[in-house]
Amino acid sequence: MGFRRRASAALFIVVIAPATSHAQAVQRSLYVSVLNDAGAPVPDLGPSDFIVREDGLAREVLRVAPATDPMQIAVLVDNSQAARDDIADMRKALQAFVTAMTAGSAAGGKNELAIIGLADRPTILTDYTSDRAKLLKGVDRVFSTPQSGTLLLQAIIEMCKGFKTHEAARPVIVAVTTEGPELSDRYYDLVLEPLLASGAAFHAIVLGPPGGGTSDAARDRGMVLDRGTRETGGRRDNVLTSMSLTSKLGEVAAELTHQYKVTYAHPQSLIPPEHVTVAAAKAGMTARGTLIKERQPRTP
Image 1: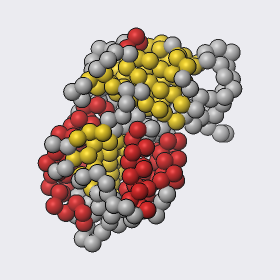
Image 2 (image 1 turned 90 degrees about the vertical axis):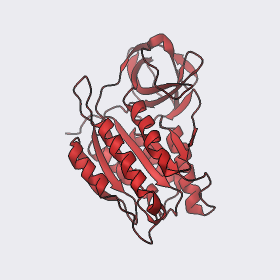
Image 3 (image 1 turned 135 degrees about the horizontal axis):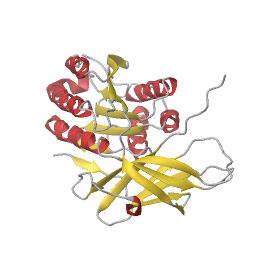
Image 4 (image 1 turned 135 degrees about the vertical axis):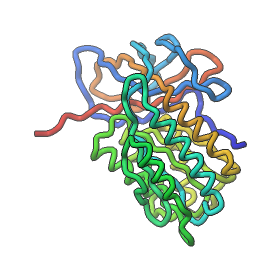
């Protein structure tokens, strides 16, 4: 079994948004996951169950509802040489994840997923679609590429550019990666900046013991896996065997499909907050949140 390196009950979220001026409080929202001590989603929560703060100041939680907005999910798969012995288990886990995320919702919205291979260069195996059959064909195209490394950091940058171009309303990145060589020539801050600006939640399942080497590329990758997941409301799990991938991806699917949309009052201010935190009001629950990025008006 793997072990989870969980975020704390309160999560810092970097807000990158233009300053606004209003005569009264405006409403802002977050997508929030709430898990119990067993790691299962907690149902039937209301406004009194959440604590939202901006730069340490408590804000009034106005309403809480199940998050039913469709997601745009980039699934990044390490198909490098390092994953050679794990491909069969990866496919099995991805098949279950795709099935769970394309099941639809009571609100009728359909999530769109893309399957991206990471070996040598980010490669689209299946572009964004809600068609389960097409996505499963993409999973079947996951093969290990001999004598290759992985470009996880480059793929994250490219996915964030795509989210911006297509104005993704609820972007999510889910990475399944090994501790194999990272070939992206990117400093961690050049990856975190577009990731945080995109409004995407970043979830990562890392196959292999923590560490991942001492090279500059490995350290940059480690920083992105650590801070990128924590600061976007995502999660990072390390698993020691690929046989644990199906259960861990199942946990990610359960978390994503049982989130809340938490709306709170943001007072008039010319200076936007640097940090927003969300926490569960009761002991025994952990909350992680992703601030919903404000849509910018189109220029004529």
